[in-house]
Length: 436
Image (cartoon, rainbow, N blue to C red; front, top):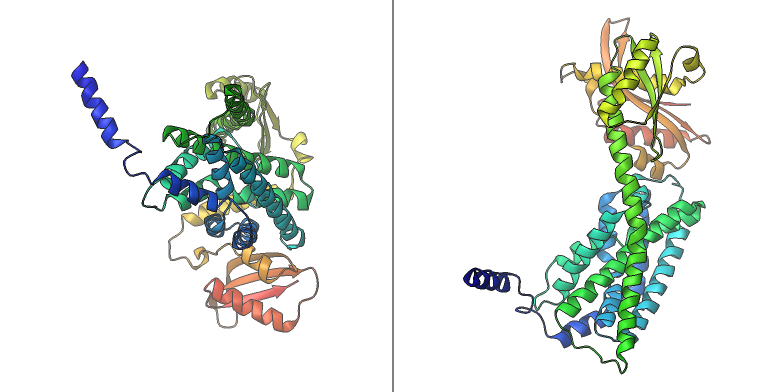
């Protein structure tokens, strides 16, 4: 038994030893302190990074957002605070807090200004992803912070730090907070600030843990009670930060499970030949969820409805209320857009069964982000491939047809430029543009 313990001890000491290639403590501390202050180049870099991140969130570009996170210097003061707490250097803690507060305020002001004046005011999916923090964000921030401080204490610096900047994502939440202020949406602002707070606190905690593990030289307290008080404050902040995220995670996981089960129930049990689900509304609530369906076609009998209700527990939907609108109840609820969506879905399915060389199946890219930037006055547009039959020659021709409407009249020269741009962008042999 002792031999096994000795072998395992040697293995772990050899493979997981962080002391072996660590840089001198003085060198690591000096490098971290150097990046704490926000002035001059650091401050300008932060402002430029904020605007880049705002643009990325605005046009829903993941690549641009990643680029902004790579050039952001926000990690500096956070790691400095963790180092200060770990070494009892409270002058460094105060300096880190001052600079982090300054950087946060400047970032929120810059992002608010951007989203106030940008012509694009829709909340993109990348932006919405920063409004609902969960326990997973706590894990990401902690693990990312651990990786970052371990890399920072090495003699040879690696590419870990840029990866940590991307994973922990300090920049996008600040931009989202600015979007919340610019649009007057308190929910977006609070959710984004909470995510930023989670990332900052747990990167700081990770730094503190590694600094203590590596036994960095600490300043001694004259009174031991002061040291215990500081440790107590750290744990209080950690618990206050983590508690709401656990609750939010519980809500998110519960909602996700409910929606998956509900969609499985709808697809498997409401697949009638002459009746179609044209609208569904899934309402999750811990006290009692609801599945609200709008049906079109032949009405289901009371016996069928009763059978559907009895099958709900088979899909872990016990206690869920099933609301089905059909017949006279459906007529008042039917929306033309829902019917169009349903018809288009059927058309799309049937088109997928056509040969690949069908000219109408040419893929049309999503042009919304580009058109919003190029033509801010564009109200809406539709684009499709169509077959035109020439009666005089009895021949058919395939062309791409675009119908667009603007908030104000567009000059003919701009119409020609738009037509040529669309033709090149969708790689169409011929394109017809109709301006309404």
